Amino acid sequence: MSSEIVNKYRERMAEAYDLHRKFVNPQFVRVLEVIGYDRNYVSSEGAYLTDAKGVQVLDFLSGFGVYNIGRNHPHVADVLKEVMDEKTASIVQMDLGVMSGMLAEKLAELAPGDLEAVFFTNSGTEGVEGALKFARQASGKHKLVHCHHAFHGLTLGSLSVNANHEFRDRNEPLLPDCVPVPFNDLAALEEALKGGDVGAFIFETVQGKGVFVPEDGYLEGVRELCDKYGTYMIADEVQCGMGRTGKMFAVDHWGVKPDILVISKALSGGYIPVGAIITTREIHGKIFDSMERCFAHSNTFGQNDLAMAAGLATFEVLEREKLVENAARMGQRIEEGLQNLADKYEMLTEVRAKGLMIGMQFGEPKSMALKASWKLLHKMNDDLFCQMITMPLLEKHNILSQVAGHGLDTVKILPPLMINDEDVDKFIAAMDDVLKEAHKITGSAWKTVKDLGIRTAKTS
Image (cartoon, rainbow, N blue to C red):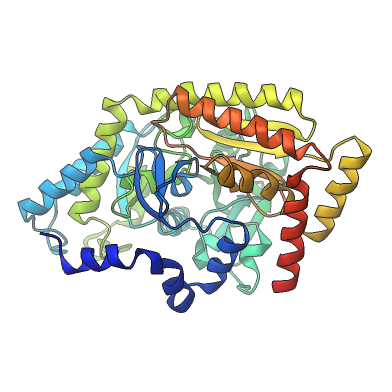
């Protein structure tokens, strides 16, 4: 028998946008309506969303990387139901749960090197906050170094190591002694570390804003510099971990062991928020160094049994269905297909990819007519051109994607790791069609986006 809540949910599906306009975030409602993303999805399974009209949409956004194993995976759902039926003694607080011990054991088995001490969190930004605290306490140094274009979350500590002004604005002053350096620049990093006063260097192994991938030798060089100057190395794999790049953790591509590894998003299986800070027993022991400090860092819900069960079930799916290996194969197919399109269309200037974390970089065209329109769009708004890609991908081809970051001219895709050859072929064919239209100066694509720019300017 359905509960009254579920009955009301079904009855009120059409009210979603009205409810959010009134009670949640009306500005986000406006954004979705302006760019044509107001589809009102009512169900989902695997790699597909279904909207209120019954149209299936290929989800190449994956909830910003939450749904690595696909949406509503039945195995994770079954495990959660079984745990609820078990009536476990969860979150006793003044006791210990075996479920959290089991997930910690699994993470220690999979994490690189001697990372075996685990602290569970509820989100990625909470994981970053904890990692920064761990590094500062264990090192005795408060200074932090981070990268340009970094995104580590939006709570105040995490925001202090974000280098994007659109998030930092209206929040200054943030944590002091947080120094940004360019990604992939070892000389700049050494300049920042050489005083010996830096507690930690935090980085995304593959940067989410723009999908910037480490150059050969960069992470190995980071490890050497951190060792040389007594700085802890924190790898933020909240988005790029859990098989996303074709390895369980992205650092595995380069054989580098960080001192602290932060994960979240896909660890949840898409059901229960969960994250983890994985570090060495040595570092962990410097924070929790006495019985009086057994709660030196703590939270209420971090070790709840449902979240732990979701994490364990997610690893079972990743391993049984060989999704990490599939991410590597499908990612290579998409990258090759996009490289072929880059040879064909001048405005697609670069493809940056690691597994199924893929960024498509666009640049100013050489032909005069296209160049004039490009400059006009960028004069109106730095992010308009990418809407010429993402909007028709959704409207015409029913594929959901995203603009990768403010002012970058980059479109990003994060497909579920369980996509197949048919999904890849559909995406590449759609991109071919969208790029063909974008390269027609008299085509509808340019008019649509110019009109969007005008509407946005009038309503802002």
